[in-house]
Structures are given as structure tokens and as C-alpha cells.
Image (cartoon, rainbow, N blue to C red; front, side, top):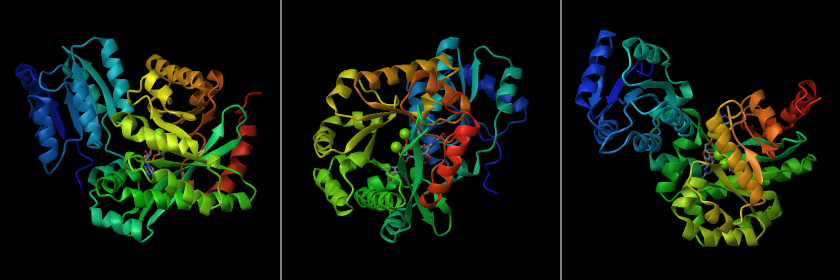
Length: 406
Ligand code: C2E
Ligand code: MG
Ligand code: MG
């Protein structure tokens, strides 16, 4: 038993009265062992040091030492896999946009409580708590060493999965994104968020990126032999872009595999890029001169300005999945999605919506004339061998479900 299936509560509020009130209500509801923190710094300390981390946090927003918004960002950096309930006196509009923020941080929100609130509202919110899914639970437990990750890279335990990108107007398969997986001898398939960070901080990311790219290039040729000409996208880290030899290395690999750079998309995450733009600009511009396609990934989660974006020769803009799924009905998401789409258009980039999860998302992209779509509604990432069969099924589905309209 890992304890993932029982609630472990933490309450964070700078008001001693509020903390006591919460503690009393929770106790009356039968919750014991609640960790009470008088501020966000204290909460972070607890998260970093306690052997068992909480999986449900009741969070105040307005706190003097570190506010709730900043705290959420730190939680996301720590890959917190539990849930959050925001407890605040701020107005409904702010609380709703914090819910959106949680979504972009990929943190589960169980809703918010508007101060003052009643015990039954607290009880209803707690009632929405569910144990983490096996994948989330794995994320929470993962703690691989640099040596394990090094072995994985050197011994060829990494493999690429591929997720299709399709044209919203025609349904046509345009390309695939390579997403690395670790076939772990004991744990099974391990997701990249559990080892990319380790590879980055231990100087292993150069090696990893080369492996992913050479796998993707070989795979592109194999598909081409079967009559499928696809664009392949790979994700690169900031460390890759900080290495001045990177453009030549990439060009060398592409030439060796006989793939011309126009068929290769280099995806860079927006938030990371904006943190260290100056160094990356040199490498990005040289990649572009060599005719690689450049894509700005997870757009909307960083803080690009129009001016900064216009300086970088991006060909593609990928709207972060946090702003795509549900955009049809949520005004805040829709505003961010539409602004991103308009920005991409204005700068003559191809716009990709990530995280298209259901029919409503798909219809909304059609309505707004987005260029490309990627997401579970179309296909989950899959091993290369699965692609031809998926494509047959997809073409059939496009017709059967009238995905292109009548
Ligand atoms: P990303 O580049 O933004 O990739 C998209 C992620 O969203 C993938 O997660 C994919 O499985 C997931 N996804 C796709 N469609 C949906 C959907 O409809 N709903 C939801 N909820 N999720 C969807 P994955 O494969 O776990 O990768 C996570 C991140 O790890 C990637 O985000 C990328 O930043 C990084 N990554 C993956 N492969 C590599 C790599 O080879 N090198 C580097 N440096 N980073 C990589
Ligand atoms: Mg990507
Ligand atoms: Mg993305």
C-alpha cells in the first residue's frame, strides 16, 4: 500500500483564525493529521522534506510571504500530482481564472471555496477528491538516479512513440511528433516528465536528443518506403539550444539519413525559451537558415511578447493543451486560444492546437479555422508500428463520423 488512495490534507493560510477554522471543520468531518501551514514558504519546505507529501491542498491566494499563484507555479515545478482547492475571499472572476491557471499547470482543481464558506461547501469539495490515476501516482513516486537515466540512454532503452498531427480542414495526416519513452526493465513504460529533467541536469540531454532524432529520421525513411511522406517533429531542450554546435550536428544527422531539413520540425517550449532567449536566438536563427522548421511549443504558458516572438523565425505555433480542451465553452480559455491563433496568423505561422480531446474541441477548431490538430481525440502517442493501422481507421472515422462536415 503506497498511501496514494487515502486523502492526505494540507491547509495553507496566513490567517491563524482561518487555519484554526479549517482544522476544526476538517476534524469534525473525520480528517486527522492535517498539515497546517501559516504561509506558502512553510508549505514548500514541508513538501520538500516530509517523507509523505499531501495529495490535497487547501490554498489561500492572498498571502504576504509568497502568494498562492506563485505557490502553484512552485508546485507545478515539483511535479505535484495531487489536487488543490483554492480557499479565498477574492472575487469570483479571479477564482475562475485561477482554476484555468491550475489547468495549465496540469494540477487537478476540485473547485474553489469563497470565504466565508460553510462546512457543507467544504465537504462537497472534498467529496470530489479521487486517488491519483496509476500514471499520476507513478509520477509522484518516480525518483530515478542520473546513473539509471545514463544507462537507459546508452543501452538503448529509450524509444520513440509518435503522435499524429492532422489538417483540420482536410483530415489529412501531415506529420508526427516524436515523444520519447523509456522501456524500463522493471517499471515498464516510463514517461518523459520522469527523466528529461534528470537528463538535462546531468549533461545527458545532448545524447538523448541525438538518439530521439536518429530514431525519428530512420522511421521517417521507413514510412516513406511504405508510401507515407511525413513531417517529423522532435522536442529539444534549452541545453540543446545553448550548444553552438547544435545546428551543424542536426544538419549532419539529417544528411546522413537523407532527410531534408524542411521535413524536420524542431519544437521548443515557450516558457523555457523566454527564460533564456539571447543564447538561443543564435542557434535558432542558424537552424532556420539551414531550413529546419521551428515550432514554439506549449504556447500560452510562457510570457512571450509580440515583439520577442516576431524576432524569432518560427514556422509553427502550438497552442498549449491547457487552452484548447474545453475552449468551446469556457470564455477564459477561448480568449487565450483565439489570441494565440490570431498571433500565429499575424506572424504567418502555422497554428497547431494540442490536446484536442473530444468532438467539441474538434468542431471548435474547424469553426475557427485552426491549421493542425493533435490530441487524444485523433490519436494517442503510439509505437511506430501502429501508425499505418491507425491511419486506415482514422480515414474511415473521418467519413463515418462526418468529421469534415456533411
Ligand atoms: P509536448 O511536447 O507538449 O508533448 C505533448 C504531450 O501531451 C505528450 O506528453 C502527449 O502525450 C500529451 N498529449 C497529447 N495529446 C493529448 C491530449 O489530448 N490530452 C492530454 N491531456 N495530453 C495529450 P508526453 O509524451 O508525456 O510528453 C511530455 C513532454 O515531455 C512533452 O510535451 C515534451 O515537452 C517532453 N518531451 C517528450 N519527448 C521529448 C524529447 O525527446 N526530448 C525532450 N527534450 N523533451 C521531450
Ligand atoms: Mg512538443
Ligand atoms: Mg506541447
